[in-house]
Image (cartoon, rainbow, N blue to C red; front, side):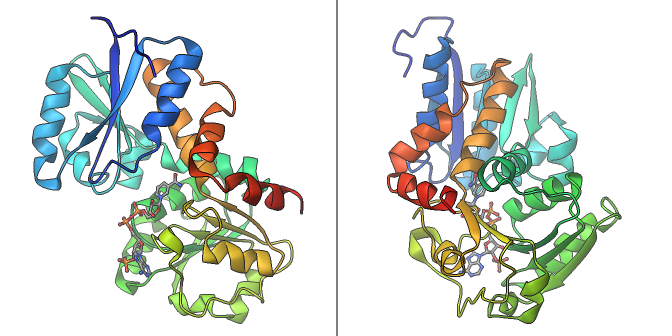
Length: 299
Ligand code: NAP
């Protein structure tokens, strides 16, 4: 971390509740140090009822920029002055930059996911058929990223079906070239429709701490299909273990976490972070990732 703080040091940070578990300070400070940039990145725990005050405070304090994580990504949208096209379409912000007195909201999750699918799975999104688990903020970012990258179809399966219906309805007109549909989560239980899925992405919180979907059976998926889990702790989630049992190419969300962070860093500083630095710092901090990666890549 930059320990030579001066009156000119730029402040970056992250707001969330809780925020103590966040690995963003680790990877962002590593990039600042590696490039010799005079910034420091700090965690700000902000309870939901304090969000407006916190945003006003960050604006008044003149911070350079900050990340936004659960539960504020959607609530912050109305508190900012400008939204990028991506953030407006997704309806959620994970990165804010101050320009003069104005705060611009941006969303780097969609780009982070697409980068990770390409780098970690070498997955060709154009023309692909995707099954997306979840209908929250991460699913909204995923659907925007996937449709912009040319996915042919996206089926959304969510525990609360109404939310999946709403998500698909929200994006039908923006992405009329893609076939958007919904399915019950039961599709995961060995449903024959899995045969036609090229890529399964979990955007739900299921997998965190080793939690699992009921009766998941991916046996019908084609041998060339891929599975991506946005969850990265544990490194090998039960969904990824099921993918591995079926010899499917798979990756967890650590690459997405690094890629969305790299995009945020460039947005704030105008500099590219050193290639691979953020991901390697994350993997070292999370432990067990090397083993998973070796197995993923050795297929
Ligand atoms: P969110 O808006 O709160 O949405 C949560 C989603 O998870 C909803 O679809 C919810 O279904 C579903 N869900 C929660 N518990 C469930 C359960 N027990 N069974 C089935 N479905 C369940 O959260 P989010 O912002 O989309 O984030 C979701 C996950 O993605 C989090 O774990 C987050 O850490 C991860 N994420 C990772 C990255 C990365 O860089 N790797 C980036 C963004 C997000 P209902 O609608 O039925 O409640």
